Length: 77
Image (cartoon, rainbow, N blue to C red; front, top):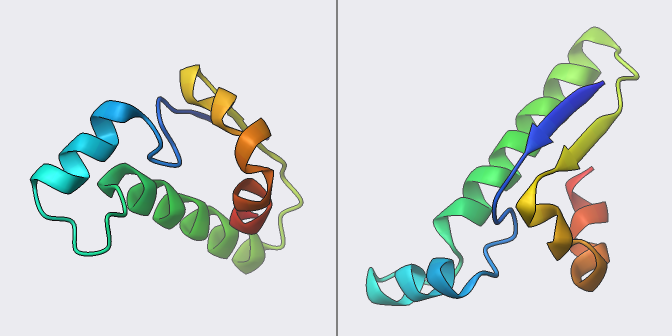
């Protein structure tokens, strides 16, 4: 099992979006979202490289983003 704790994994929080707009994110994608997606991609690559069937468990204050963005979560693997 791989456990991840996160505050705002999809970059939907008001502070996160404010920073994305104020500091000039070109496509208004929050930095934390890009980093979370990269982390999930690294985990997927590592799992496939070693043939692991480990499950990924995401929790923490940001895990509440999941019900409204279920499609986004599924796409992360």
